[in-house]
Amino acid sequence: MTNLGFQLYSARNFPPLSDVLKVVARNGYKSVEGYGGLYATLDEAGLKAMRADLDANGLSMPTGHFGIDLLEKEADQALLIAKTLGINAIYCPHLVADQRPSDAAGWFAFGQRLAEAGKRYQDAGYIFGWHNHDFEFVTLADGSTPQEQIFAGGPDLSWEMDVAWVVRGGADPFGWIESYGKRISAVHIKDIAPAGENTDEDGWADVGHGTVPWKDLMAALRKTSAKYFVLEHDNPKDIERLASRSMASFNTY
View 1 (cartoon, one colour):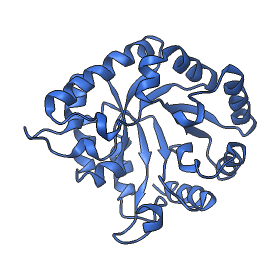
View 2 (cartoon, rainbow, N blue to C red):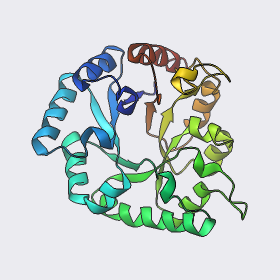
View 3 (cartoon, rainbow, N blue to C red):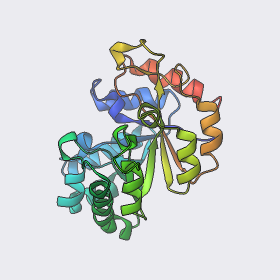
View 4 (cartoon, rainbow, N blue to C red):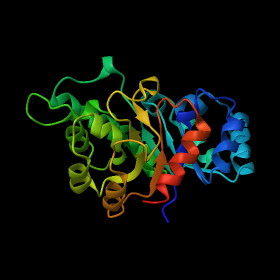
């Protein structure tokens, strides 16, 4: 059976972390994914305390999100975080709108920038890659997409594929899995509510309660190099509900 992790960003509005970890563990998750707001500014003592809390709940943190500024400007801190928390795979998760290139050449250059930033982490033994949103799938003037250009500029970049964002970007996730399956090392498992529903949750849904064809997608993803599968919901109202219902659905795929 494929194990499902829990992206802690999903629970950012439900502190404290110690309570969230109990909910996650109680619902059968064995791992979590971290994000910058959780640990970027912690000192070594704070990181060790977080690791102890994970250990106490029987949880590991094999993957983590690290912002581009942290990766480029505070590499020693990023490496300390990864080592202390037991992270194996580091993903840059986002690029804010006012920093995004507007053409293919700009996105190719960004791919090169990511690759350059990632060398230190790859040399230290970590998987290093990019996590997508929807904007990478908007067609550029030359007919290509930012996602294609990022990968062309960074041929050694791994990919944490956020499938639901691919769908929201108007792209076919099956086509991307077919073309870039060797790049995929992690997958965000997330669902999209039917049109007009769950507006108070930004249109997202618990896994198995939306429109994303997860059963077929998991069959395709199991043929790729994907190693980590991570539940995410960007704005849930109820963490217990999200954790329990999503795990129940995922176990049928």
